[in-house]
Amino acid sequence: MSLFSSAITLRKDTGLSDEEFIQLRDFIYQQFGIFIAENRKYLVENRLSGRLKELNLKSYGDYYHYLRFDPNCKSELSKLAEVVTTNETSFYRNPPQLQIFQEKVLRKVLDEGRKKGRKQLRIWSAGCSTGEEPYTLAIILLEELKTEISSWDIKITANDLSEAVLAAAQRGLYSEYALRTTPPDIVSRYFTKNDHVYHVSSRAKQLVSFGPINLNDKFALKRVERSHIIFCRNVIIYFDDDMKKRVISGFYDNLLPEGYLIIGHSESLHNISRTFKPEHHPGAIIYSKQD
Image 1 (cartoon, rainbow, N blue to C red):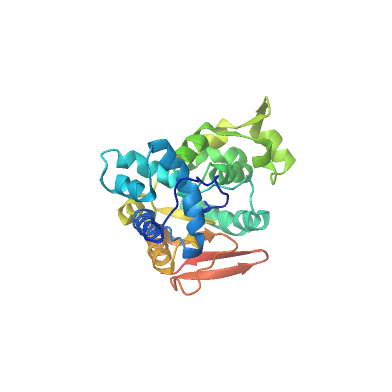
Image 2 (cartoon, rainbow, N blue to C red; image 1 turned 90 degrees about the vertical axis):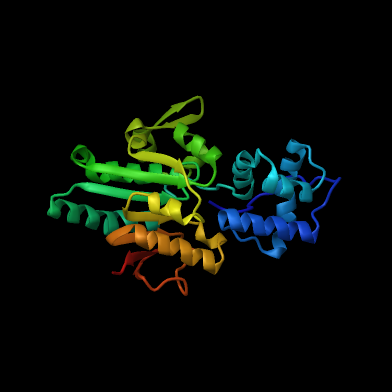
C-alpha cells in the first residue's frame, strides 16, 4: 500500500483552505492512522476533489462535515480509504527479499513444524493491496512444498484498508504489467492467459483468505489468527512514529514465539521497537520476535 503516488485533475471551482486541510488531515489520521505532512496538502486537494464532485458538495469543509455527521458516512469512509491510498505492487516484488524469505525463514519454520509434528502454517499479509503479495507467497509455498503441501494446514490471511482493492484481489485477474517481475516459468505454471488477462491458479487462490482491516484499530489486530510470519511491506512508511509503534506492537502480540516480521526494504524498525531482532542478509533485513 502506498500513499498519494499519483494525482487526480484539480477542480477549479474550489480550493482546500489551511483550516479544511487540518480538519481532513486529522480526521484521516484518527480513522486510518495515515499521517499526511503539510507539504502534501495539494495532493489531498487533488485526491478528494472527485469525492466532492460525486457527492455534489461545494467545499472541502462540507465534505468534512459529511464524513463526520451524515448517515451515509460509513460507506463514504470506504471511499475515502480508496482515494487516500494507491496500490502500486507486482508479483514477486523485491526478489532478493523473497529469496531470503524462502531459503532462510520459510524453510526454518517448515522444518520446525515437521519436527514438532504440527504441520500448520499461518502467514499474515497486512496491507495486501490487490493480492499480488499473498498470491506470490502462496506460489512460493506451492513451489517449496510441492506434493507435501496436501499434508499441511496452511492459511495466508490477506488484509487491506480498501474494500475495492480486496474485491480485485479476490477476482485474481491481472495484467501483464503486474507480472513484470515474475519469473516466466512461474507465470506458465500458475497463471492462465485469456484475452491479455492473467488468471491466477486456483491452487494459489485456495491458500489465501481476504478481508478488510484498519491497522489503526487495535481490536481488529487482535482478531487476526496468530501468525508464524507477518508481511507488512511498504505500509508503515506512511505512519508517524506513534502509529508505527502501535502497529508493530500489535504485530508482536500476533506473532507466535520465534515468529518473523518482514517489512519493506526501505522501512526500518530503528527507534520504533526493541522487541524484534534484525537479521541481516544480502539484500534484505528480516526481523525475528524476541520473547
